[in-house]
Image (cartoon, rainbow, N blue to C red; front, side):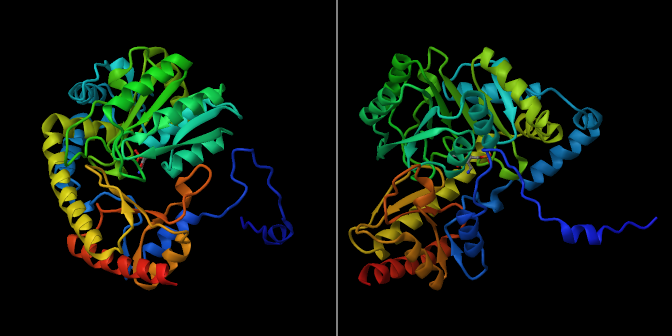
Length: 408
Ligand code: PMP
């Protein structure tokens, strides 16, 4: 039989009736930036990519073969939405090292923290509900909150994270606040870390105003300087904190595995939401990661990552000090993947980006990270994905581009 619907195709001019969740515009400014930044001549500090040379490919290959040999049929079968018990047991041990006492019934495996953010938003946000965020914050979380119709309120930060007086004011002014979304460690995009004192104060605020915290912690394990600070979840004695983390930065993002730690009645809801989202996260991958964690010391692996990132961050800091014009401010992260830069004066960051592209270097302009009014002259630099030589050359180019833009 021959199928031919060519004539029909020519007549179709469909207007799709999308839901309010779908963005009205097809524009993808960040996607475009990453596309331009991805060209081979450009030294890109734009993406948030881990260093691929550190992925434990051989070890993962070995444990993958073992999983196929020893439990292939089980690993390839459907499984429970909450996730593989062996992997959840490993996560309970990791959480204990951070001072968070939990059980496998309080841990659900997700398809990365991005899904955890989406499921939490779906669970709590009705159109018009307020979500309070750091200003600036992770842009893909903003996209999720917007898609559920949230009213997003940004709170200013300083070197110690969100300013607590401003936070309390925002909560008091928005009685329909559902939760505060925070990235307390080496925040994306600023690289800043919330102090222990502010973490305790945040808990007091949510207890007082009867709201929740969504603590997103993909970077906390990558601390290469200074002392560890306990997660906000550690201070939570009223079960108001939903804690998220992920294997993306400590193992490999392509695995698409993250986890949620929350109180058990919330877990029941998460499990139902997860079931309707994607049934369960990839069962084979869960088996592989659980086995990797049983056979290898993941902290040894994380220490390797820290050593490389510390070196790269130091090289970037030294280069910035030498090559950026005086008066440019930047954060001094003690971990994670990002440095945040603020160029004084009302400079147009998009124009600076265009000049940088001519100099074959790239960053992500600050604009998409702001929920509302944008601070001009801000941008994010990533230091995990380029070699030390590329960092030196790239920062020199960036310094020249900033000088050129300022003098115009
Ligand atoms: N939260 C933050 C703050 C992030 O920076 C990222 C990714 N870079 C995510 C969540 C999503 O991570 P995942 O790969 O686990 O989905």
